[in-house]
Image (cartoon, rainbow, N blue to C red; front, side, top):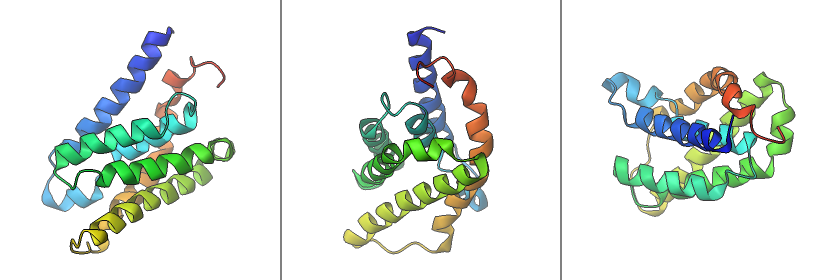
Length: 160
């Protein structure tokens, strides 16, 4: 596996996560959509923190803000804070069994949602209800499968 393919796998996974985030869903399923971009970033932040960091989270957050139509910087800030915490704790989180790792990922997703909620409150936007938090639970449930499926492209990266 060459370095070009590994970068290609990284960009392909982020592009797929971005498309899954923008995919139209029925009204009842919108709040249940896992935070695909955040999950993908967490995966790569834990797998290769020396190559993927806060910059990529900030850039993907800006793209999400533009695509979804939220306040510019809302997702960028929340994903960047989440990425900073994930990179800071990556050595510990990688050692956890998959179940405990899923719980840690859930906490990271909650942090991302809390920062986003803080931005909405600072801008005077209405506070979302309970369904706002449901995507973190679906992220918790999806993480074990997500992490297991992502292991093959990562195996070629040196130092892992």
